[in-house]
Amino acid sequence: MCGIVGYIGKREALPVLINGLKRLEYRGYDSAGVAIQSPSGIQIVKKVGKVSVLEQTLLENTPIGNVGMGHTRWATHGAPSDLNAHPHLSQSGKFAIIHNGIIENYTSLKKRLQQRGYVFKSDTDTEVLAHLIEEVYTIGKCTAEIAVRLALTKVEGAYGLVVMCEDEPNKLICARKGSPLVIGIGEAEYFVASDATPIIEYTKNVIYLNDGDVAIITPDDLTLKTIKNVILSPEIKTLDMEMDEIEKGGYEHFMLKEIFEQPKTVLDSLRGRVSAEHEDIRLGGLTDVMDQLISAKRILIVACGTSWHAGLVAEYIFEELVRIPVEVEYASEFRYRNPVILPGDVVLAISQSGETADTLAAIQLAKSQGALVLGICNVVGASIPRETHGGVYTHAGPEIGVASTKAFTAQVSVLTLIAIHLGYLRKSLTVERYHELVKELLHIPDKIAETLTLNDSILEMAERFKNASNFLYLGRGYQFPVALEGALKLKEISYIHAEGYPAAEMKHGPIALIDENMPVVIIATRDKTYDKIVSNIQEVKARKGQVIAVVSAGDTTIRQMSDYVMEIPITDEILAPLLTVIPLQLLSYHIAVLRGCNVDQPRNLAKSVTVE
Ligand code: G6P
Image (cartoon, rainbow, N blue to C red; front, side, top):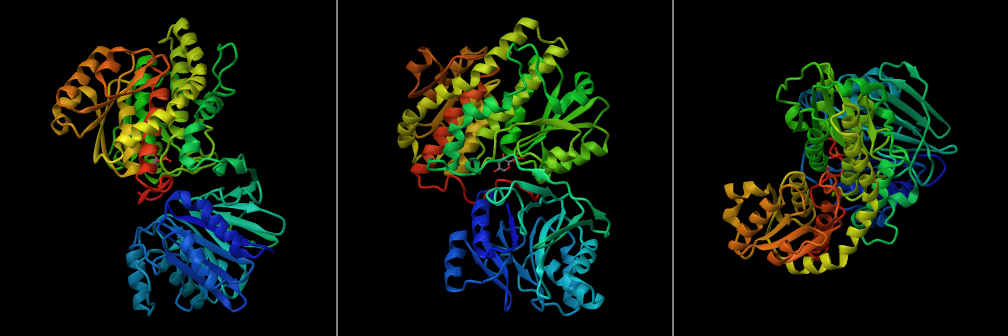
């Protein structure tokens, strides 16, 4: 969703901002803009469309200056347009602002400002902030910083924002409440961004703002305080990220790179957590809460999108290995439906970005009702790991493609590791089974690498199905969530309608859709429901559906019945989702590329959904 970048220092600001905006493109957006403190005052250029469109416009009118900020907007209040794009100016043009998040009381604020003569040029909630700050500044005859802090006390909602004031040109004022901001520290220069990707090429020293923080930045100094003017001492952290992690490294798209990274990322998610002798599983982020986890009466998993699918896989695995009841819920439903949270409940929030607004709200609700809340998160230092009582990082590295791939397999491998560990500690798992599972889990990275050799044959399959209008994905047991994930991947990036279903449930509806034009992807690996899924394949074939089956190596029965087959290495049924999802990711990828879609930045989607 919206992205923020800011610069103050000795360099020309514009190239830094444009570079930063390009790094933020992956978050999903529909317009972009910049504001520069130039010798003639604040200059703003903003355009609907991609950053490249903005860049083109900037060739005709290039603002010069060493202080500036840029924004990528994902429309919430008001359609994507040049006028609604950020930055926004206050009435006199003295203040410019960029903002992520949503101002909830903007209607009442706007009405009052309009009554006092402020004229709005856009439909956004952000413009309210620009005028409000100016009003406080004018009436209070105060500094820009005081005006920003006072104005923010009147605001309800979420924000990560940067403000510039024409009267104080050597200054950026940043504030955070519910929407992340990171400040990079260079030598006599600072970088501001909504995540670390625009900063990493300049510096690894960063400060993450906390909710309620305000940072006042000049080229040589940074002051951190609360909105109520209490001075804070900034905690400088080192970014654990390398440049090559946010570049394509020779691949045509980030998504393909990330699919192919999975042997490494799954290994990274296990690294240091399983001892060589497999005798011990160490999960540092859970040590303090392990007793509560062992005695949990119920686990409630909350997540959105692909992370919710990882949660569903975890439900099957936890109930099998740990014998604790598990419920998996969309965070957006959980937060608004007055859920019953009982003593002994543990809430597990899963999120790649760690910033998903609904998941964060679900965490806050569960915490307010006294639950132990744990997080499974990929982005180090994000809001979710900071809001939870404990948790485990997935260590998949930055995921840039909007459609999640490596984050999913890292989530599933971490969740599996937790389940194996808990099963062992609760003695719901025999020692033999424990060792068997740990050993096989450590083989999974190699087996993913083997599965990736299907790539060329999947490309051929994609040629055959690229013009389909609908797809059905079926799976049973551990493979049902993978069917959902396969369908999600396809619709996200190729815009083909796809549905995932439990294979047996097909008879209660989707079977009506099956004819010779309907490709049906069936995950039919060898497990305890194998015979049942063979029957489901027959049901599809009887209605002339095109069957694309994901099978275990050496399977001949299903091969004979199916139109296309993708063979994965043999593994334990509990671990099979880590392999079966790979060909489905590749199939979606190739179909989307062949259809000419923007794979890494699909239309309307955002990587990090920071609004509810
Ligand atoms: C967006 C992304 C998905 C992601 C979902 C949840 O919809 O496009 O890829 O699965 O948000 O995000 P999270 O960061 O919480 O895992």
